[in-house]
Length: 136
Image (cartoon, rainbow, N blue to C red; front, side, top):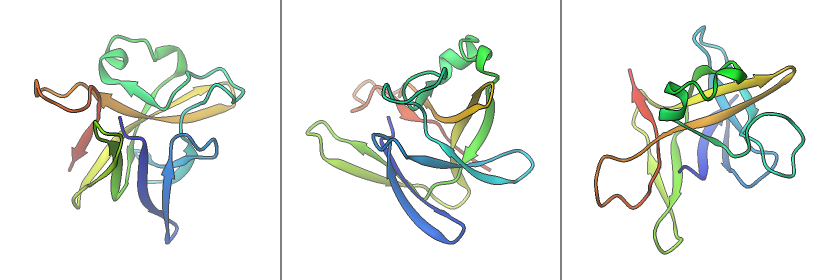
């Protein structure tokens, strides 16, 4: 489900994990600007946006995110982390030109970024959700 990411922002390499309440992700908007935004919301954090750090693609298409005025963004990361069946961290590198799709949601002055996920097509997939990786 993408529990951690490794990225560069303003010349500084950063490795961040979702459980950290201060976790932020880079977001590249359609106009090319990159900004850091809080990664999702935890139950201990104030706010009205959804709990968690992920948005299922099918729920986006179904309109369940519409009330938070979702905006698609590119999340330019070098790699992301998933845990395997034994609970060990495994890092997956993205190649040049690839990014993870993100969704910026807002409620009044609150803005947060969520990783867009999909269900793997392979029947024997280790994970039930995987970040949506795009290129171009």
